[in-house]
Image 1 (cartoon, rainbow, N blue to C red):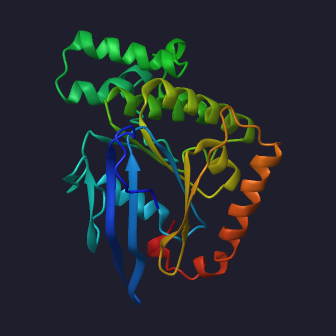
Image 2: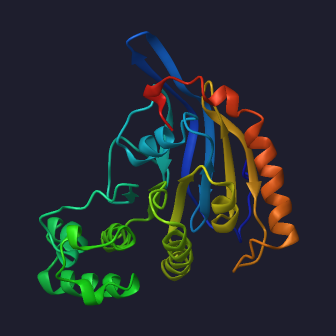
Length: 272
């Protein structure tokens, strides 16, 4: 886990998960999805939650987002307990979750408009983040007129325009082809550096986790818990063909595959 010793030069703690348990009531009895999860994240960190399907990583993300409640334990953002969704946490889903009746511009500006931000400021925010994700030329297109990669760019820009402190991403590139996925991975790192956001990114790809993260948090299942917290100290941009990259990938893969079998036993209600 993250070193808790006082360090005046370290960024402040933005997120703290403490003693988190989650139990679902399924038709065949209770299912323990998460047990005793502790996680501390500092402002500006890029964290990847890595694990096989059924290990509870998406359940943990949804609890952090405030979409689900823990059975026991707490989640705090800047020391304030999370009791539900809030503008300080923005979620990007694998299936985009865009409003199909709104254009690119309207989707991105929806949050600020809903918060009654002045129309001129909404326009400025929308223009800024459309440009950041390379969609200015597609401002008046609707989601059905966009590729999967473009839809995901809109989803990311919508969170950025809403002025979130923490960007929560649930396997956002999982449904994309390999080339689009690689391009968006690079763009996400550029956005993260520019905005200095804190990112918590769920994936089951070891390569993606090592490529993106400052820390890779490996989760095991039956029940879901944090098995290992690995600092990735490779310089960016990272070379997936380098000796050091592949050493880390092999080590994390070995740790992950040691409990894949157990992960398959988790009930469907604790799905990933």
